[in-house]
Image 1 (cartoon, rainbow, N blue to C red):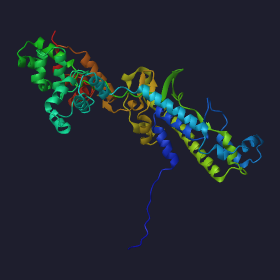
Image 2: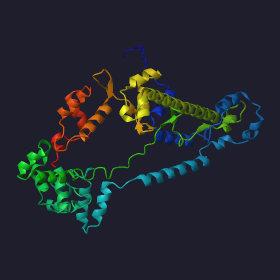
Image 3: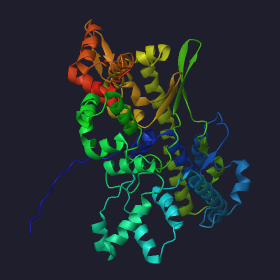
Image 4: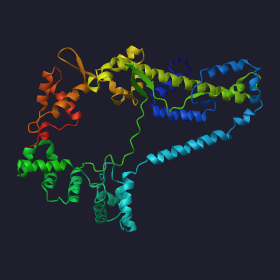
Length: 467
């Protein structure tokens, strides 16, 4: 054994700071839920329609010194130990009511899953108990895209049945809605969709069956030569292929998108842009002054009761301070963003300038991490729509005149150029690159390709159309 003395330095965050950081990171809907939870669990908090001008926190401080407040004589007669005990009926009623409301809201927002949708259709089939088990097992192995992720051979080992039985039920499921569900890959799914349209003998069916995975590398003209058909027929066949859904269930049976509630609103008032904190649905809280008699010297309340009230009072103060700090920080940061992106707010999205978080952090004298917390997952309503706050931060592309354009501006310009091209002779990435160079936008040709792909625009050979 060895005895020794060791000194260690450890940095810890104060509970108040941790709470402030958590509050700052919350979007407005999450903040509302958090405050309502605090309102239900902390008896010293109360909701008011409009906050009063006097600071009721100071009343608690004064109450500790004032032992002769005649207005509290009625409160002192109340058995506070009983009122604050575990059988607090009033708060239990509130919690139960809010719980029911939350359950109701959640129920109305829940959508049917893909499995539920398919299971309903399976239930309409006249199947034996064993066949129903096989069908249910197949449905359980269909992913969110609509693809079957295990083979019939693998299911045989698990279910201990004949492979023919599984294939028979699977063929029934392939006729379910959405069309194409139950396939093992994209090729099979597209072929199922064409069979559903009675197009088994079509050129589109042949192309998918024989050359689906070559389409990305071949132009329409090459496909026409490969299939031995005229150009216009190949083009019509490929147009039909493009109308099919490669992932038949994707997007239809996912959870409903979360509602976007802007945290901030920017309005133009008298020629100036004003930032408004959108807290109309957030409960306005204050400390309930009815409890101040419990912390007075000479109170008949027990030591445990006074300790409980003191703890809840401290928690309430931290919460209110965190709310105010969050509001002030967000308004301050957004105000500086408006100052730096004024042309955007005056003229529109095409005038968005390059801006990085470090710039705003320096101007408002805050840490970059704080700006990141303000920007991520929180939205602002502007005259041009609702944007995530981090939308206003983007890197710059140099111009030949020494100026800079935002990445989003350049991508928009590429999109406009492609929309104005001839469908008979679409522009290649090299030609788009040359046009941007002529406009004074300096970027590499491979960057043009990268931005085009991010815009989900096909290469030139796939944009060609015959007239």
